[in-house]
Length: 386
Ligand SMILES: Cc1ncc(COP(=O)(O)O)c(C=O)c1O
Image (cartoon, rainbow, N blue to C red; front, side, top):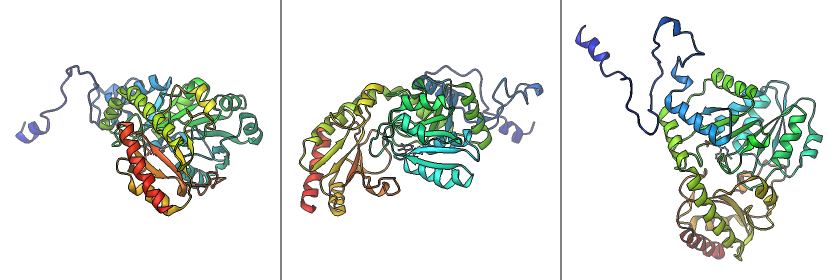
């Protein structure tokens, strides 16, 4: 062998690997197969890296544990998980009913892409009960898309009742379960067919990795999701899969802290003279609170409140005065964030349902008393501008 060939073949993977706590991060497109007979034997082994290697398999099994699922598929973002799962089970001529409080990019996909492929899209108000929802289903309704609670204005849907009624009619249900992070609510145990989450949020937990998952129990749905990934070609990097697995280890601990701090801040806000209402399910009288108490084991750090003045300059003054709350989309990381929700409500069925400035907070892992001091800075600026 020449030195060139020796160099090219030096330093290749060693087996067996030393056993570490987490899985190895195997980087590989090519998978070397033991013999010619295995080349096309896809059922027995992974034959190509896109099918997922050690870190992917470990993440999939941990997520199956989290979501009480039989099968989990991974996607390069939460939005890709939602769109990928929808494409895996819908076909031209179907109709999909979508809850009106759905994440805005999911709505954009339904309006622009699903409609282009001949799928009818209708929106329904999140308050609609199971019976009323069944009454508006038509013969071609194939799927009901839920997001409970809505990630801006916290509308809870009666998911178990809707899933049971839809199942009787042979209609699939899919939920965006990101708020619960797969931890606080187990949609598959309540009859939902597909539970999707943006792992980017609480599972990742550090605002630095994108990924999404779709989980299912029914073997036919699992098969359809797997085929969708295979056909479309979604793949995630093993480094990202490892990061998600690392985030998952501390998910329950972080969620408990987010919950505790967010409840403290929500209760404090509810007493403030600048605040018209607080949308947090643990506060008495919040719409959807009874569903949350029945179905969820806790709350995360994401909730919203309305300011008494709807004046855009006053809202901007409030947000601009915040020093600890970053101004940014996304949530689920260790850091606190705030946004003005009003520009995102425009294409809803009832865009002005909140009658004022709707502010969404993500309460991170900081000391809640420091966050309260920050909100006081915001209120002082708001008062000066209102
Ligand atoms: C409720 C909800 N679902 C899905 C997503 C999409 O996740 P990703 O940013 O990973 O695409 C987001 C992102 O903000 C979200 O808030």
